[in-house]
Amino acid sequence: MCKILEVLLDSSLDWSSHVQYMISKLARASYLFYKIRNMVSVDVLKMLYFSLGHCHLKHCIVSWGTAANSVLEPLEVVHNSIL
Image (cartoon, rainbow, N blue to C red; front, side, top):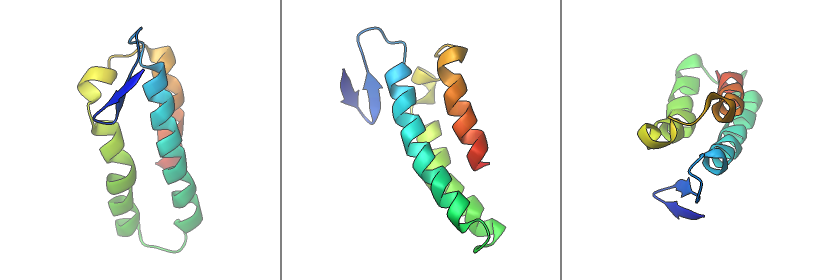
């Protein structure tokens, strides 16, 4: 397995290792949103979402976004918890 431009590549290219990496990043952001959701305005939450969550999801999505739905479903669950 190797990491190129924050994208984890493995020999099978099933993207499960990269999706798990993304889940860990988004889980940290989700915890932050949970803690500050009542302390800041919606505009600040949007700004934080785009800087902490959306940018990681959008990065190289052309390559890893074609993974199987069974691989991407856990990522969708974490993403929905942020939203």
